[in-house]
Image (cartoon, rainbow, N blue to C red; front, side, top):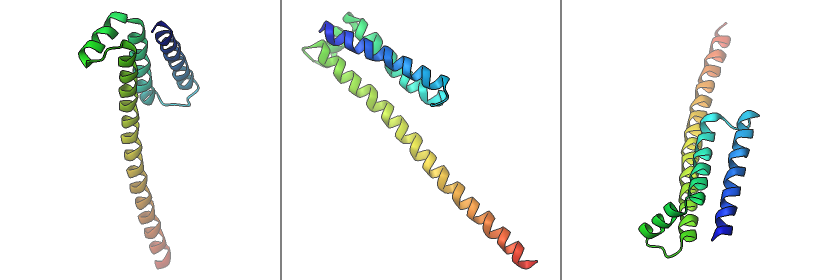
Length: 116
């Protein structure tokens, strides 16, 4: 169990470092990095708080604390991916609306050009 928790600790610290480096280099926007940072902090806290992990395992009805950690990791990242799916859907809708507005403006410009 300790090796798994140590591996999750290392991975969460690496994730925090990667996200912060990406924000610093402007590869990712700050508002999107918050989800990743929150997920990494949750992993870091759970991998270091053995008592909390044992409690969560009992509450979830699981015999092993590492299994509870894996389940929580899966749920946290599922929430992060869902959030980004919503953001991507909103951006796609905004892109379609912008394209339609541009087409209307181009049509009006051609109409004005044809009248002259």
